Image (cartoon, rainbow, N blue to C red; front, top):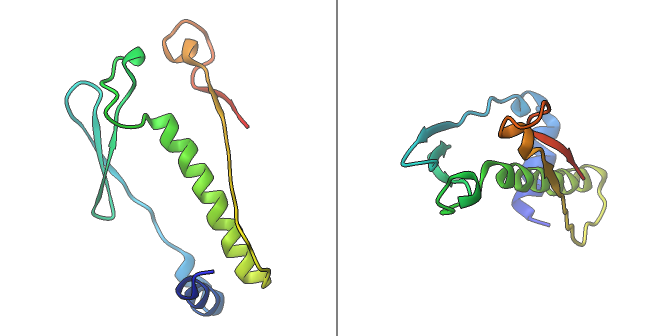
Length: 118
């Protein structure tokens, strides 16, 4: 366990819950074709679609980033809860699969978007 994380989380946030209140912000700019550059906390994140959806396949698509974000969020929460509960955590592996409703996205079906995530 990261000592820095453990100290910060257990002392700062536990003793002053107001510090946990924050606003997250991101900015996205559409570039060439379907390439998007997002900026979050001064860090750039590139997004693109695969050729089958009209993109250039130069970066992960938004659905893949959402799945990766969900995995990361789960792993981080397990770490945070292990610190709060004083449980030794040896490792975490989170795997999610998204089943996108491409027919809805393309207007071929009534139900748009992701059908389910498991």
